[in-house]
Length: 408
Image 1 (tube, rainbow, N blue to C red):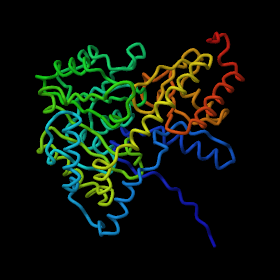
Image 2: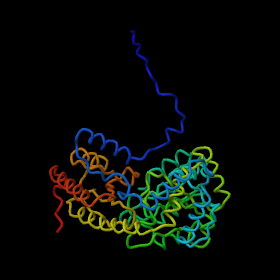
Image 3: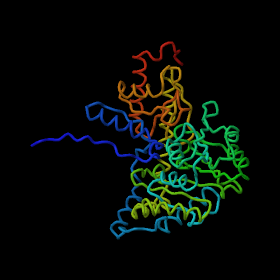
Image 4: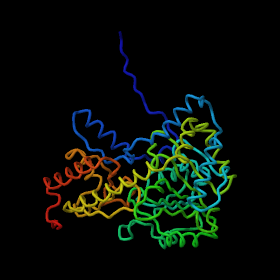
């Protein structure tokens, strides 16, 4: 048989695809899994995913939904009972009035970022976003044709947004300001005074806030605050939230957006119609059970995260050349490794290869993450201690921490 060598060339992609970024955590996970397939032991501290099981009453609700016939399409915005439950929860927790017609349910929370930017950002519009921050913000701003304007999160301000700087960054072309509190990757949380200043600065400007509140139920020593709670600001705010982090439901793919008007929600629903049709029916029934059911598993999970946070911060601060602030929310630490004189990406790669510890470079979250690493403590205490022990051992062996004094 004659075999013909066929040259396969990449099809001509649309220009917009060159503007689309990625999420490094999944790339690092793939590299770590490849090493595991070769027999290497890897400690996974890269993925932001609770290591807890979804609470039993939520799982039971989903099973019963499937058994009772929830197999069909649902309204594209989400089933009414779930939108009512979300509206009730947001109204109660944010102290605002939300109608179910303002709610759109999506398969995961990312589509709310995707759809909101597609619906609102024209070519050349500017969007201010936190940097370091969730990488999909910048990716989707560019994909929509907008111009990303980075608001640096600096350690000296506890990684909170510098409100005065945000105000200075705004121009007549600014369309949105993205907030994320508690923040991924730093674990920082905005304070009431920060939100008041932002609200006052943009109250009379044609600028919307996009408030990513996905970690709002995972806080320590503080209360998650929403800019939508300020008088008059709800009408200028899109709230993103979901079930993945709070209820350990990452694989269920269930999130939602709360929009300032039903009219904007209906436009977002058009994007759902054109992309996903609807969110899986049985997961929506599970979402109702999550919101209306027993929240003690959530409280126990957060207390466990608190214990891990405290231990991880202590362990990292004992490693020569590393310093780590105490995060106020989410389940990440963002240690400073500037004194080790290596680029963050090189250090993260070295620790995966040599120590068998998968973590993320701070630059996976933007240029202002240089000099930092991100570790997720959403895993067992034993694995956290093992992983940080391996980090300390590897840094010592390679003498990366030479001339850095030990801390008592």
